[in-house]
Image (cartoon, rainbow over the protein chains, first blue to last red):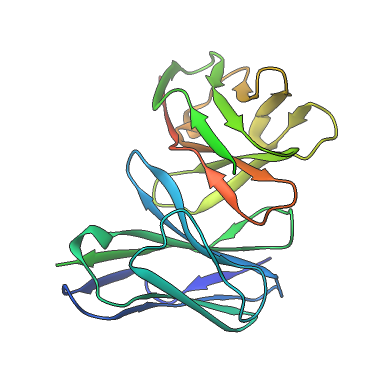
Length: 111
Length: 113
């Protein structure tokens, strides 16, 4: 089975801190995604990557950046965390056109 | 660009009665359409997928969805709800040549005994 692993299940950070969320997948998938999930808003795409060192902005990229130096790892970076970035962050991977495999999520609280 | 509208934020049904979750989409190209389910404190799981074969798609746990191009809809149904169907359901669209998937806001299903 595909495994998508997010490094932290819960994270608490202070306003202005730089935050790294890490995601690793073990099935050699080309595509990787970062979403945030907020009640009543569903999942909103932050960034995605379809190859190593490639990245594309999703619907809400402001305040975020990403890094994909290796195929299996896709990192989400909050350069200066703000309270409105408190959310559940979900990483996913897929082969082209195929279903998404999700990690278990990171609940980030910014105080 | 594609988008999805889930027409109901909450649906409440009695156990044993039919479930209908409504989804409308917009897409510039021939879309791929998905339904995902998220049970409380669990990860998202694919229920079913439409990619231009049969318009009626059967998924796991007795769910099915019908693609209607004329109505730009992809509604999810189940003939008889079970208590274990209580969860949040997401309709998802992807343009055929696009890597990006767009999620609806979700529909929370509660099942009454």
